[in-house]
Length: 180
Image (cartoon, rainbow, N blue to C red):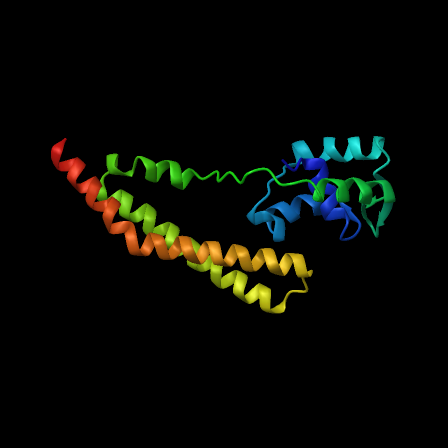
């Protein structure tokens, strides 16, 4: 399993960044679709990376704004990132509130269930459209483009599955509500 230290090294391998900028990668950047790291885990990880000599800290003059700390990966950090990347990945785990809710969807009122599914289809379609536009204009590494394409394929497949099969679960919920 990739830890937050390795995630930070990955971000820093693309260029110097502040803790805030690293966090933004997990909120809005290419890593936001499959990784998560908050300030509560990023800053302790940066401290450990500093202590281990895998990154350095560069004071940065904020031009009238408060100074921010920029972090830079060191050769030791690049080596640690490489060592993490060559290990076989652990099995994927999909953490999804939606999948949990849908697992018990037959227990929900049919209209509520149908709205949840419809809202998620809309969310996926919006995300797909956003990624298609960003992908055509953004300067991404070959790996980022590959992962973005893989993500688009997954989002498209899930949206299509929900569109084509939502009636099955909604019908089960309707049957359950008539029995209850």
